[in-house]
Image (cartoon, rainbow, N blue to C red; front, side, top):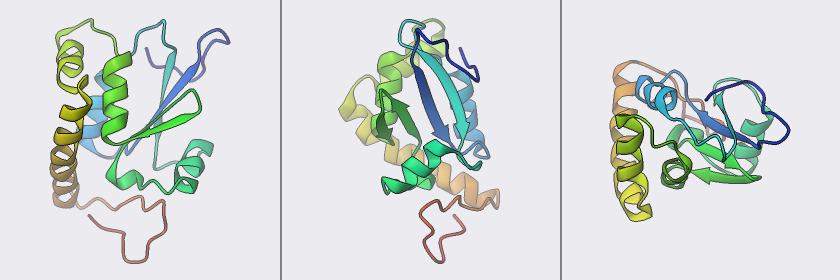
Length: 142
């Protein structure tokens, strides 16, 4: 369930990604977490936010991986998709498939770089600019 605020008794879990990426957006729109875990809030990395400042301060390049913030911990890239699989709902065929694929940390570590490569290629073909949250000179295009 996606919402803008979490009830006090359920922790807020943040998923930060580039909403302009069609592949990332599709994935993040179908991912669901178990209600017992918390309330998932999706954050667009192209918008200024406190969590993006925290990600930048940690030296994480949002153009190269989504970030899951849970229990004050930042999970990046393959670790984020692995954590999502572990806390994810198992209802629906896509949710079960996501859990089956990424519940293994090793499988997530192998598959995530390939998925990122194709994501970056897609964004290059679409002419998208990078978020460049780390402010690296000459790092505006995919």
